[in-house]
Length: 404
Figure 1 (cartoon, one colour):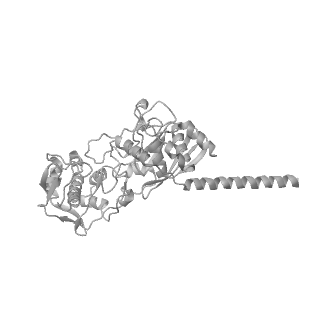
Figure 2: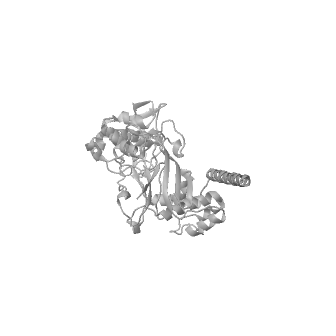
């Protein structure tokens, strides 16, 4: 009996040691950083461009189809939904619309999205040089801006149009150095057209005549985008140069304790781009749904890159010949096995952790027949966007997963 007890103790010690080693290895693996090369980053940029993401509410871009209600013909299935679209800095146009309908003034709206000292009346005689069109007075220039829907003014959103007018005026002055250089006419600057927009926009421009956001005596470069997804980001948060007039925070009416709270309380919740799984495949009803084995392949690709960074060049998407010598799903699994890893053949569940204060996904855990693996969300996003089929993409720092 004593001999048996000694043997059991030895086995227990051995197994405990092996479990500790396994946990240590998993921890070390998570701390390894998986990065993409220049060719792969370019591929992702091309896929992102193909989505034609709406950078402004007035772009006329179609809304995102809610794939949650569409059956692609297979089940179970997973889809990755992003909250909002780039760039999430400055004025949230749909958020401004929501705030206006909630009774906020244009100054209230602007203070929600920017840090500034005052709203000041600027010299309206300043000339704005527009590339390809010539010079316009400041007020005439703003009348030609097409960045926000006119009909919002008929739906309780006039204060949002006024906020946009002040932001547009401020941006033009900051961009041109008070008229010392020209400004472009595309979404890279502000959308300018030959004819005045008129209607409620013309009224908003007139009712805010000359008004500009000022900090330290100068107009601020008042960036804006269509849909932030319930959170505001500073310019430094997204990798741009830091700026004192941009801010970060939650863009909601009340506290947030769940994704459902965010969907119910975000000021921009009514945007057609608020919660979207971007991309799609024609053979699956143009949806972005993925099969369990396809999600497993993405997880395996990232796991392999973290195990051996030298394999990263082989991990582009397999359905398009964009990279040379790309490994298919079976090859990736073989390479994992040869390095002592247990690949996933199929995924059964995915868990998302997120920071409800900053609006970022903080961890993703993918579970299946090969065990569970936790990943850094930025790395997951990078390799998802690289490996996922067609043009299916995650387009922001806060994303969720839906399973059907």
